[in-house]
Length: 152
Image (cartoon, rainbow, N blue to C red; front, side):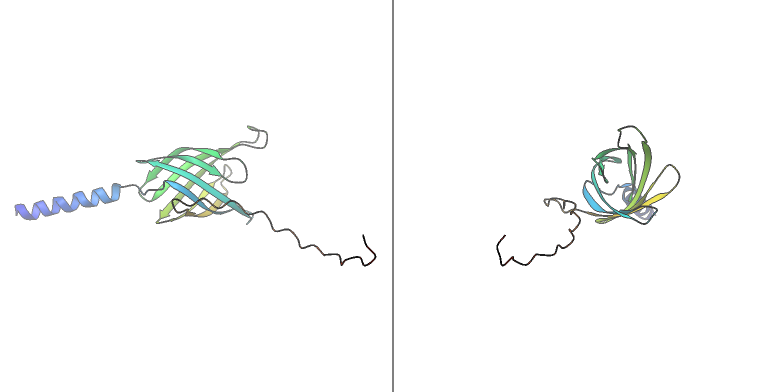
């Protein structure tokens, strides 16, 4: 009977240890976010996990913004970002991000003050590789002028 109880206690300790562990999200995550109008935007997160605390920056459209109130709960993360308008402070708004992490994939949403959601899917950038820089839009092809036989 004592052996059976010891086995049950050991099993409970393992289950509690497994469910209480936080997923490691430290690193760079890149992908796309889709706004409520359906437009896609590049999104980069640089995250650092310290136990259940999450810090880092987010880059979406403008300069990197610091994240605040970052938390990790199992495979779920959450954090806030105060995005300011072009006049640094004017039109600032708080966005609340939540995501589920599965391996090297992160899927979630950012809730805007009015309740609209921005959906995103990110992939972890492998350690040691540099994050891909956003690619400029392709230029429209130009028509080449044939050479002028009379000179220029």
